[in-house]
Length: 221
Image 1 (cartoon, helix red, strand yellow):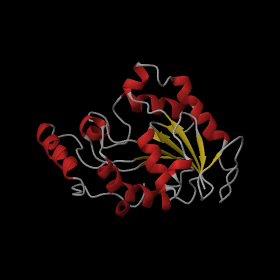
Image 2 (cartoon, helix red, strand yellow):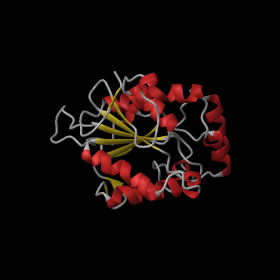
Image 3 (cartoon, rainbow, N blue to C red):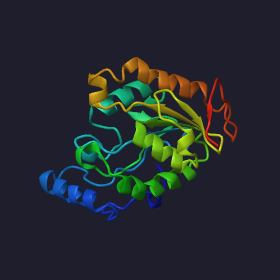
Image 4 (cartoon, rainbow, N blue to C red):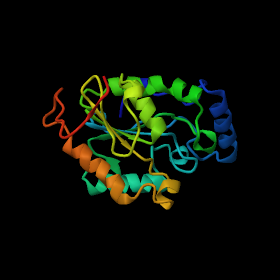
């Protein structure tokens, strides 16, 4: 895992609304994680997946990003299909969230997203091999663009949209694999798989600074 110093503390005080939710959940479910959810996966990863925030009975319960709910079921099934997970653990992949604590109704407010962004940016900076990023949903997309030094006006969110960051890394957008998006067919398994097919096509040819860019990539600089 990444260095613990890059993670928010278990009792991070930055967002009063999320602190209140955390304290209430600790009273209701004392056996659950109920704390900021840390990064999950390979610190030497070439692929970084950025989600929204912990689900109430998913990561907030288990303490493991995207573990324990429908969104995680689809994510890990897809990673497994493409050889990006082994025995339930990401392989060559690191999973982060734009917001580390459970937000009411799965909807963090702008101040909470802003408060958590330094953790995202610092962890990304600590990953020298990361060259492809996948943002799950619009909030994750916006945080990823800012953490990667891009400019939002030039990076419009859209499923399978691609954005070249100033570092040369590529950001690929996806609809979030939430239960709602799956149930309404806004995101199908085939659509989600296409995101990771593209990520593999764009993967660095060798460990190093160069990124193999295949096809059209929107310029974010």
